[in-house]
Length: 123
Image (cartoon, rainbow, N blue to C red):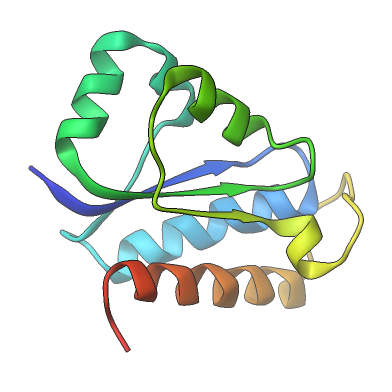
């Protein structure tokens, strides 16, 4: 099946990473059949990379912090992305090695929702 959008998240063990992972799941649940969560580590496996490229019309990558692990993986693999969001810079916060607050989870969800809606061409 070809999906309109694959969401890749570099979750990491930090508040923004956990919030991004939760938001990805929520967005997938809300958009079944259009969105799928992509396996970020799989992009470095040639057969999986081809499958990902074939099965997704568009791709978005969410990095939890300024280290940009996800972006580095995508660039190494040569997989093009249609949109990108690095959370700590966007939210102007420091990386926190803790679980996210409900408020942070909602902020991350809203940021990701705007990007997803733009990519899916929804108002």
